Length: 244
Length: 244
Image (cartoon, rainbow over all chains, first blue to last red; front, side, top):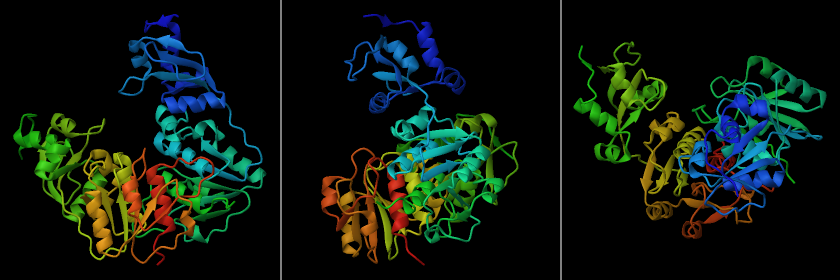
């Protein structure tokens, strides 16, 4: 069995370049770094190349290329040395007759984007739409915060105006969120098809997008109007979940 | 005006040692690094020493000591250079006739602990009780995630058994959270006085603590039982908020 030991190996250089968005986009590939997430990637069929350290057993039902510890350390994001890293193929998310969607307008923090995708999956939403200026879906922190939901839930990145047009064209009611609204979350009666829209961490939703919503609400708070966006999304998406 | 330029200055060495829990505990002091949080610290009366870079105006209504950019960079947690850092005094949180409390058992991530304190403040809870093995309240990441709620809400750190005894002695009903429960969050009718208890990110609540709860519930989820603890806390604390 061949073991790659050179940091100058062309495949290793390509894999390592995937830490940067530019190269992820160019090659349509991304890295997954935790064993339980690699298992999810494998199940979902998007695994391209499995990389294993030379001295560990292969816990996956998939052939692997072997690398030295030094090479694995170079590819690793973690402080601790990984046993395995998966190179995965990006896939375009597809929505099929969606009833409940989450839309994020320019949410900047990869941890927030990932946590929101994980939460959307938990509460049975059909997909997450990211505006072009949101954090990258394939950033290591986004992937880690997603906890595998990325491999199960359609996530689509588009210009916010295209997203709003898509929602309108498909008869999906848009609920915007804003601290300036007088209507509260608990007063909203969810439409059969709807999208919940959340904005940037600092500025919230843009005025332009707010104006194009069918209805807006604020979350009931107690004299301290400061909820993290992933928390606001969780509270609203639970409150408006589908009761089966 | 004297400007401290030496990294060997004894006060600077003391302040810098506060990046470590051991020295924070010894001196009962901690560092606050963002201007809007320093303002909250000042309002709450726990500011001990305000440190300003030599070349910036003082935006605070408080006297400051001045330091060189080099010294400020050493004290900074951020990649960018701070204008100001506040050294603050720890205060023991005090509960006065609490009706709604959050209890965390061994929550490890400082961001989760901070986000939970921020959310508890938003939803009008009276305080947060941390078990001894929770992440440190005065860690830079906890303070940043709290977004100032730390200065407004009583937060108390105690052994989990002492916490449970306190709750029992004060007639506060304990609601535990567990994925194994068959009862759902939406079925709970909140008692007049209650505490919501959340466990460790990996293991959840300990069996021992679960057994000592008056009632337990799980959050309604859709075939993907994987909610971040701060998200679970937000959903439950909103659902059981005080309707004013």
